[in-house]
Length: 114
Length: 117
Image (cartoon, rainbow over all chains, first blue to last red; front, side, top):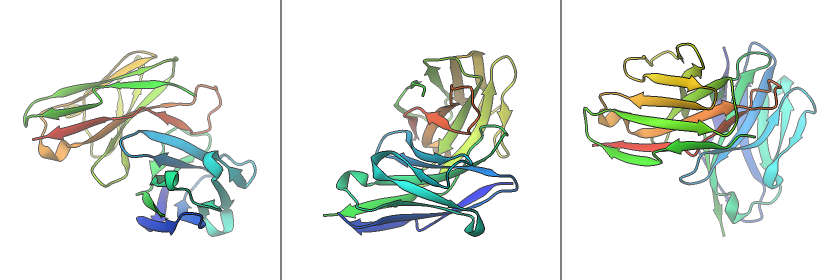
């Protein structure tokens, strides 16, 4: 069975500050891990994904995430927040080599203050 | 990537009625997935729609309530039957990557926002 836990349903940062959104996973098989972003009234857009290659993954819009097996974590970071980063962020996991069924975390709503 | 179009984008429905959501993809895909996103919550997988066979439903979802069609490799429908206010949600269609490599990545439509009165 697989699951993801996102710590913090709401995160607020100042524009220009570091963004850190936390995700821990549980998986009985080597996982594939994803971060998706959902802007208001829109569908989900893939930010980045980990598929067993490099542990530090760079995505769109300056975001990156590091896969840490020892900590079962896949936290999302961005060095400097922009107002346009305000959105909901979802961490998701699927089993490598299995179906493409994704299990999503509960989401973190990021607010960026001017 | 894949371009996914859903109709309707939003609707307001009366209790007890049914609504069919359509999902069209611009390329052929083997599996299509239907997710539900209830207000303020995350995404929950309803079912996997495979062309040429019955959909596979997740625990807590049944065919009588959410019948699914998959007539070809680019199209699927999800019907929400006998709706109640608890069915007010965003329903999202998604497809696997079309690169032929199984990475688990899914692409999503913009969703259909249903409000049941």
